[in-house]
Structures are given as structure tokens and as C-alpha cells.
Image 1: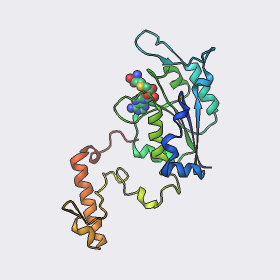
Image 2: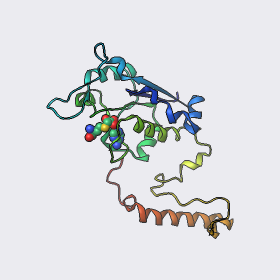
Image 3: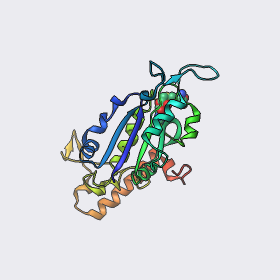
Image 4: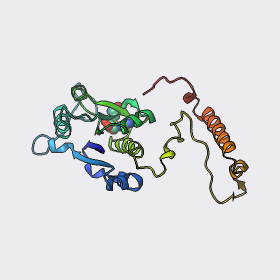
Length: 232
Ligand code: SAH
């Protein structure tokens, strides 16, 4: 069974979008994973299929109704569905490569995309939604965040990346940022490729890359070298 993604959204036309292109799109076309985008509005109330209402207690914006969203979730994911249920949310635990890898090893994911001010808190509790953030900034909706999460997962699925090895050396996989890359031409606007990379000495190249990765991580992301605080 390949990885199954179900996305719940008010804008199903945003899918597959970028996920239909290149690596992810080719994998989708050959069935290495599957994607369904379900319209939350199918479960909306009344003639206008209303999905949202004003926040209890007042304040700006609108909130997606718990009953509408719960029905949409239940239709996409019955109680015995083993797939984790994620809610894209700036309040969530920030996504890490470690979490991405764990998701890629599982049966799939049900991903709820918020809009407006977000969703009624009670549906988060009642349906056991895991809130996931893609960073400390606010988007207008969860769809782009869902695309980010799925893109990161799909490239790790078996057989999706051309060279299987290219997954292991990348930024974050080793706990370090990746070393710099170079390709032809040998001289670009007076800048040469570092001599050692042209030496043919594989051990020396590996040492150089490791030192570069360490130096880069120390300079840009010293937090990655510290013991993990947020480990998932
Ligand atoms: N009022 C909310 C923000 C709502 S933004 C708050 O202050 O927390 C509307 C929707 O966009 C959210 O429900 C969520 O699904 C999505 N979203 C916004 N920023 C996000 C982020 N950084 N990561 C994941 N999803 C995000």
C-alpha cells in the first residue's frame, strides 16, 4: 500500500497544484502515492453551504464550524483509519525533517487546511488533530502549508528520489546544514571551484565537505549543534 494523502480544504482546486509537477507529480502519476482533495463546503449548512460563523466572545474574522469540519473529517477518515490527522496551524509544533521522515514511513496523512481565523477548538480535541506549523509566520490558509508538508514527505517515499543516497547527506538529515555545491564551468566570473573538489581524492573531499557543513551550521544555525529541545 502506497502513501495515501487526503486533504480537507475550502479550495480543492489548489491541489495537486505544485504537487502535480516534477518529482512529486511523476510519483503521483505512477501511483507511488495518492492524493485526494475534499471540499469542506460539501458539508456546509443551509442553502449557501455555510462552513464558518462569527467567533464566540466576539472579535474579528470567522471561525470554521466544528460540526461541519467533523463531518468532513469523518467522511475522509473513518475512526479505524490508521493515518495521522494533521491540522495546519501556526500554533502547531514546527515541522522538522524528523517528523517528515516518520510521516513518510507511515500509511499516509489526513491534512486539514484552516482558513479565516482558524477552526473551532472542539473539533481539534474531538478528532485528535495534531497541529503542525511550517514556521513562525502567518499564511492566509493551510493549503500552501499542506503542500509544503506533502512535498517534504513524498520525496522521501521509496523509489521517488533518483539516487536513494541523495536523501541522507542533505541539510538536517545529518543534523547539519549541507556543504556547498559546484558544477561547470570551472571558472565563473573569476571564481574557481575549490581545488580539492577537482583532486579526485574522495576521502579528502569527504573531509572538506564535513568541515564546510560544520562551519556553515556553526555560523548560521548554532541551535542545530545544541542538544535538542524540540525533538519531534
Ligand atoms: N488566527 C490564526 C491564524 C489563522 S491563518 C492565529 O493567529 O493563529 C488561517 C489558516 O492558515 C490557519 O487556520 C492555518 O490552517 C493556516 N496557517 C497559517 N499560518 C500557518 C503556518 N505558519 N503553518 C501552518 N498553517 C498555517
